[in-house]
Structures are given as structure tokens and as C-alpha cells.
Image (cartoon, rainbow, N blue to C red; front, side, top):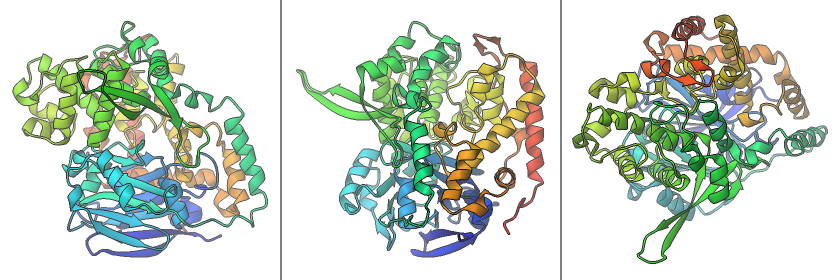
Length: 587
């Protein structure tokens, strides 16, 4: 098998494209590894995120399109949120569309002269002027694009941004095929900086697998492990929303800007069980996934004096319900779904948007700001003002929303309230589980709960040992990097054991790739962190706000001394990557 990646590079400034053979496929695997290799080649480490040369890198893995749940795509980019190397991951149809277009990565550089849509297929590349879409929301944009690019329906992926991305809100998201997102760290803003409204990828080729005699057997083994066991059942049934009740009972669910970690009187209204009973319309799945973990709710909205209703289909998961539900003190599932639809329409990252508005609400309560800034009377549990605020956040009318749109810490630095700004590298994910998670997200590569799974470590550990925790964080990250280089859905991490990954690669004739897989994953881990440091990351500038030290879970209050010691030890360990220049260079 070839030892090079097939990559297509499009320059929006010149309108030209070229197909590249990038060496090192057997070493860097794909996904996170490939994105790091391409970022090192294309990015300008000394420039901010809005420099036209900064790349958007969409990368898939060697197993994409061949096995179930190999359905994610990694986006590597210079984040407008912190102007450092970042990754964001999304499902939908994009990964398979890239595979069947014949590419393992799409690299986009430059700046389009007008608001544009990029179309990449197996036999064509085109850039189209779509200035008439300026200011158009996610839903109208998607509807129009489906009409304009009607060929290859079902094998086509549509990425688009909303007003938030066009207006350079630093936590704007990219919508992928309606229900999935490159959500965190401002991927949508990065697209907006390139004057790029949308990307269409058409996967209209086929893969010849006739030479792989063991492939059907290995595929069936994996498929059975996914569909005939209990490993994935919970993701289809209630989905991740089932965690709301569990985390509230254990005192780990952030409520009202993390002033509380449990609210027995309100959780019933927004639990996963309530969503399933009252609002669930259907489950759907990313391309190549037999699980169906995407839960879509039915939202009815009365618009007339009699029985006149609009209805919409809105996806929900645990994280979005936390962000615009418990974090904003909402107690009704239908009101949460209403806010989720507003977030979707604007093209915002739901977690950052929810946490930012929670901070603004408390800042208003403490008279650090007034309604002259917020324009609406923000109050926990009141849906109307939040609906208006989401629109103002995506299209800022004043200095306050412009500042808040650069991140909650930016707003807190201007107006006060740093102690209760719930930011851990970026706006927090929905886990008030303890010190290990707070340190993990604050210093993590993606500032994500998915970097290490420290929220589960918090709940499992009964003692606090710094050395054990640092070892867990590094090893768990390394294992996840292997899956993210393949690029698997992390829900399938118990299915895709190292043994199964080895068998899956061998069945596709990728024997060379299976050699020293552990060392290769360690090299990818080092390269990602090295690039992060070279693009400006400095753990000494990161801090954990006071609000996190005040958290009390069912296991008791936070141990500030332990949190500080863990923070310093983990930061010191990460510092070692700063000096590992180009580790494990490909042969």
C-alpha cells in the first residue's frame, strides 16, 4: 500500500487547486496525525488566525468508509478563540463524502474575494459567488444549497456558517449536515475569516475491496459487537441526555452559572427521560453508523390566536441541554429545545453561548453591567430574554455583545466578574465532577471533556493522588489520539480495542501501519502538543476561576490544594512537549 496521503489543496485567493501526495501515511496514520502534519506544513505560526494563509484542514482516517462508526472528521485550524493550533471533530456525512471523493484531507487556504461556496467532488472543484447569502441563517442557507447542489444527494455533505461566523464571533460553529457541528474554539469564525459561507463535498466514487479477503469477516465481527451487545445500546435509547439525572443526583450538574450543582426540583423538567417521553421524534445517525445516537425532538410553536402551530425538528444531547438548560436555570424541556433552535439558526457553539449568557446573567444580578449593555433583562429561567440575547450575540449591536462574542473571559476582563466566569481554556463543558476534570479541561489540548475523560476519573476515584492523576490524563489522551487518528467516534472506544484496530487495518492490507502503533501514537501526541506550544500555548497563562474552587459535589467540597498541585504537575509534564521539535519525523 502507498505510504502517502492523497490531499486536495484549494487556495481561495487564486481560485486554484492541486492534488498533493503527502508522505508518511504509515507513520502519521490520518485524522489527528494527518491534520498535525498538514498544519505544520501550511500554517503561519507567527500570524493570528485571520491571516489568509492559515489553513482549514479536514482530515479523515485509514478506516473511514470501511467500518462502522469510523464516521468522524478532524478539523485542524488556527483558532480565532485563542489564536493557537486547535482541533474540532464532527460527524455527519463529511467523512464518507471525503473518502468517496478520493481524498484523505481537504486543505483550504486564502481569502475569497466575495462571500463564497466551495464545492469539491471526485472530478471537479469549484468556487461560487454566494454574496446573496450574506446574513442568511443556517436553515435558509442549507435549504438553498440543497437546491443549488442537487446532484449526488445522499453522498453529499454540506458545511455552512450562520450570521455568527460571518460576524467573526470567536465561538461561532460550522454546521455539518444539519445535526452535527465543528462546534468548539471558533471553527465557524475561521470560515468567516476566509469569506467562506459553505463547503460542499460530493463523494461519488467507489472503493474496490475485492482484494481484501479477510475484510468481510472482520467487518461482521465489529458490526456484531456494535449491534448485538449492550455496548452501544444507551446511546440509541435515551442517548447522552440520560446523564442529566445521574449527574444531578451526584451533585455534578452545573446550574445557574455553576452556583449550584444539583436542583432536584427542576431536573425532572429537562431530564433525558422527559425529553424522550414528551419531545423525541426520531433517532438518526451519521453516515456509516448503525447506532443512531442523534436524538431529534419535535418543537411546536404557536403563532396564531387559535390552534395555529409551526413545527420544527431540533437535535438535542447532554451537552446542549446543560448549556442552555441547567446553566441558564431552565426547567422546561420545550423551552430548552426553543433555545437550541435559536443557537442552531445563528450558527453559535452552544456550550460557549450558554456559558457566556450565564455569566452575563450573574453579572447583571451583581450590577457589574446593566440592561443598557444587555438590551434585555436576562434572568435565570426566563426564556424570552435569552432568545433575544442569542440573536444579539450572533449579530452584535453594541460593544458589550462584541466583547462577549470574543469569549466570556474577554467580557469579564472588561466588565468584572472573573471569579464567576466558568471558563476552563474555553467555556466549560457540563461536568462539575471535581478537580481532575477542571484541570484537564483547563490545560487540555482541545479544552474539551473529550480530551481525557477526566469527568469519569473524578467519579471513580476515592483518593486524590497527583501522580496517578497525571498518568491517567496522559495515557487516556494517548489512547484517544489513536482513535482520533483512525478517525473513530469516541462512543465506540470500547468496541475498537487495540486488537480490533489491528485486525481492521490488517484486513485492508495496512500491515505496515500496524507496526509499532503505540510508538506512532505517542509521536502524534508529541507533535500535536509541540505545534500547540509553537503557536503560542503557555500553561502558565492559564488559570482556574474561583467559582470552580467553590463547587461541592456529593463527594464533598473541592480540595484547592490538590487542584493546584495537580495543575502544576500536569502543566509541567506538558511543558516537556515544548522542546520536542518535530518528534518522530516520517521516514
